[in-house]
Length: 392
Image 1 (cartoon, rainbow, N blue to C red):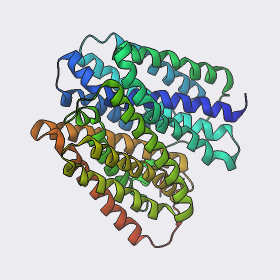
Image 2 (cartoon, rainbow, N blue to C red; image 1 turned 180 degrees about the vertical axis):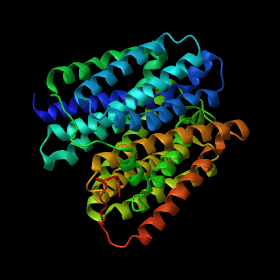
Image 3 (cartoon, rainbow, N blue to C red; image 1 turned 90 degrees about the vertical axis):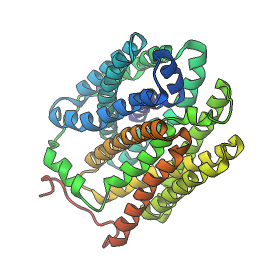
Image 4 (cartoon, one colour; image 1 turned 90 degrees about the horizontal axis):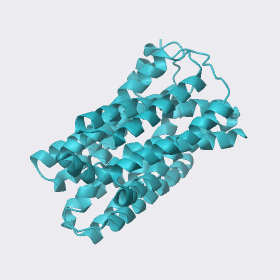
């Protein structure tokens, strides 16, 4: 099997992991009804997955760096599969919450290792495209995974979805076992190296935290938000989510092209501005679905065009540790999902679901102000830092 096909199979694994993480947003109301809890409480399932991935993945990767990457990937995929099966049998919300923690940890580690393995299977000049292919697995989870999960939940029940995904993960699991060679890391990833990048002002991981947080504040509760003022069938809701997913894919592709042609700063400004303006306009629609949907589609494009630009900005800045930079950015994406879902739950409990877009706007505005400050004070474009010795 050619390396590019193995990378594609790794992207499938990431797609399935992303689907398990994101599809909760489309079936949150079903889970809440099943367990007899509020929608805001059910949102903790998003927070638990994201926090587990954000906090656990960098630590696990650091302490296991001397272990064969193939063995680690196989182990994480196996644990993720087992935890997906466990969801089906979860008798209570508390048990399911625990399985989400396990899913977040194993899925987060598997995603980062998949990126690292992909870059080692191809030639040096193709590593950027390999990372892009893996990241498209996450975008694909929004394009297909979330709407498909929402639609299938009506036919087979939301619990059965996790069994189906668990079975599909056997495809990348067996491929890794049979086709991926043993891979040993040449350099240790120390806490000092991670802290050095966290402290680097030129990449501002807080931008990722705030713009993803603004996105998650609304998207976590997207199904009940859309149904607040409109009685949508499962097919209609799935159709809107599919359209939103397609817009995220378009945003990712357009953002990558714009970042290459106009540069990451310009693309980040445009993406964050679109995201902020759409979130600010949503409350003025009065819940009219024919106005809400177009604004949300532009919002999705703006959000996801920011992602490749921010990643390119990090890889270009941290030239000597691109894998580590991407790993930390992935953690901050998960922190953003956790923070956004938690803030969204608080907004629903204390105010109303209609205020979610304003809360998201506040977070995106912070990201935009940080971006202005970051790129205004940058001394020279393309200036890079070295982190081989922990930034010292």
